[in-house]
Amino acid sequence: MVSKALEEVKVLEFCQFVAGPYCTKLLADLGAEVIKIEEPGIGDPARRRGPFFRDIPHAERSGLFLYLNTNKLGITLNMNTATGKDIFLRMVREVDILVEDNPPLRIRELGLDYDCLREINPQLIMTSVTPFGQTGPYQEYKAYPLNIFHAGGEPCVQYLMSPIRDRAPVAGSLLMGEHDGGLSAATATLAALFYRGMTGQGQYVDVSKQESLIALERLENVFYANRERPETQEMIKTWAQGGGMIGGLMRCRDGYVVLAAMQENQWRGLVELMGHPAWTQDEICRSEETRSMNAQKITTLVQEWMVNQSQEEVFRSGQEKGVPIGAVNSPKDLVNSPQLRARGFFVEIEHPEAGKIKYATAAYQFSKTPWSAQRPAPLLGEHNERIYCGLLGYSRQELVKMRQAGVI
Image 1 (tube, rainbow, N blue to C red):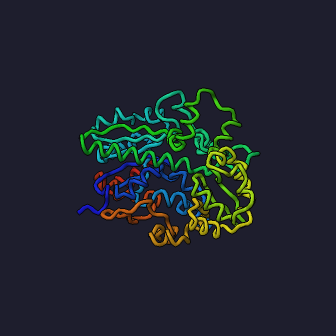
Image 2: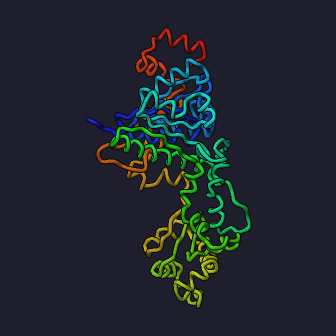
Image 3: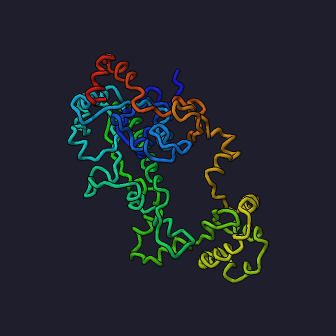
């Protein structure tokens, strides 16, 4: 009996850091058997990225690596050796999906492009996750998470929506764009798997991290692309910060909330929440139209009231009065959230080196094939024997020789 949505699906991961590994993590969480390839002795660079459990730098204690690689099997393989490449090709024959995030030129130099691989596995789904995709003048450009995050326009949109007018765009959450790229890759890969289930045909999936980020800001991008004349920076600010919406990110006495009071009933609830201040009777507040035209000025007045209020009181009272308002949560708030506790969103998983740690699980709940922690993130090369001997048929003696030769 199948207990996981992707229980019979086999995935080979030739990725590192965040975007590619997050894609395969999502597949592994759905039950796919994911085999992660790492460089011998070095491993995924994410292993050297903090924060580290108990603040002890260690290749097996990186919080980032531990989260991104739960439910996976891990092997080491030197792809720069002829033997390593041959082993890789043998594994490609055995899997349904290959996810890789290497520069296009390197994949071609290794002879591992899709046209070559589908010759040995016609039903293979190959997903490539790169900064700018496999085509166009930027196809070979390298990029750090910071570059890609800004290339997608996200920080500019955040800047325009910010109540702080006198600063340049900021970095934002540097790895958010990487996770967005991984999510797009997982979604597209699942669609390709569905197509293969209907037709028996594999295909190539080309994922651009930049385009993944742009896709999340469709409203802003479509607004700009379809104007008869380009906006000045000031015009964009006026639209983004006004735009008919009273609110945005607002400071409270002890934190922040996000407010969006656009409709008449929401405005009435906000006025009641503020205790009916006299300025709400002014002409600029008379109708939705006048409030939209004066949204920035009204938002400033609301902020003057908000800064003296408690975050919790504003959030609770606003909800009761039908005002779209939400608290900006810290990680501590989320871990201790009664809502997330009731849904079992955080669970403890024991790792042989890091010990028992609390992890975020999945953003969904299936009634028939629920999420579960099958295994913690693999130690470097932890499953070499299982894969090389069990799946590919090598002997333990051959494994020792390959290790001595630097192949694994």
